[in-house]
Length: 221
Image (tube, rainbow, N blue to C red):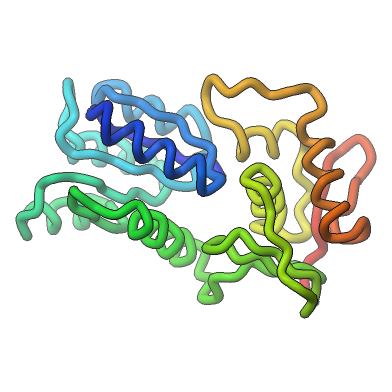
């Protein structure tokens, strides 16, 4: 799942980027408010993390730019501004949630999961296909009601991309977009390597290859 981080503070940005990568998100990080709205349009981001105190252009103005452009990606504001009026302006301006600094990374990740669930109208936090269940909070997969299978960061990211849209065929390029951020080198056989690892852990029949098109997991009936 690909996240856009808009944050000018180098220390905070680096800490958030590391936490997101550890949680198996692909992260694109931009530091300038003037370029933020353009960056938001460059990729179909699952979620945008937006600081308000940005250089060149204030974060609330950036939020307005994003929404006026018709970009419906969920936005979670991260800011040191903790006045009620600031929170109201952010939420009324189109943000989905508002988290004040300093914050715990575990809370940030939990709020991100909650925002993503609300946007997909999915009450159950566990992703499910016809035969698999995947818990984003623990990175644990199960086959039917079988034992817990812990996945690596990349394995989880790939399986999550497939299980977010059961029944849909995702191409190599679509999977790479969801797993890798800007500047991350992608090996030519990286997707096949991860699929092989997942099939070894979960069994070969749960992720289907549509020759020449891509991969999918089956929908639940």
